Image 1 (cartoon, rainbow, N blue to C red):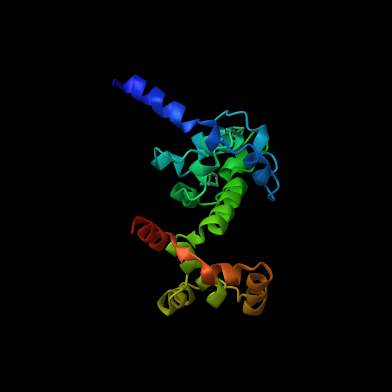
Image 2: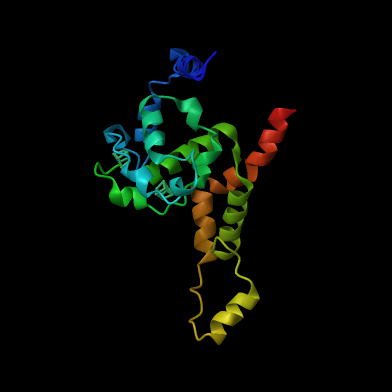
Length: 191
Ligand code: SF4
Ligand code: SF4
């Protein structure tokens, strides 16, 4: 079979109606910040300006918006590429339709964690760091000393009680405790 007919066959398989979830778009549109996904007209500005798309062939914010519009939920939920977004919000600043792509990606991540009960290990580490220190990155003592030596002001002191309350109120404590790492979930799936 030549390349063209192989691609055609794959395209037909990918678009089997059984795999399309017509309600998926509405599920996403109910999530805060994702309301305008239906307005994406595929101009590609978000992909052209995305700091991650610049370095990969498979991460394309424009395609994520289209995949949602088409209801191809299975292609997105659990897709590890979703975790590459840096939430720099450049896509939001530049979208002519006011589509908040990075908020949509956040929604997809939330659905993924809920459905799969798993998140990348680095995100589990980041979340525990925030709970412990109020910062994503645990600042080593040597770095803090260096700041002092350079005459920089001390870092703001986060209110850890408020952080803990927020984790509790949003149910994130429980999610964090229960969620496996994606690496473990993958290994279990392979066995
Ligand atoms: S910039 Fe906006 S309208 Fe253009 S492809 Fe991206 S999300 Fe769609
Ligand atoms: S927020 Fe995410 S999708 Fe948007 S430009 Fe930044 S890295 Fe790309």
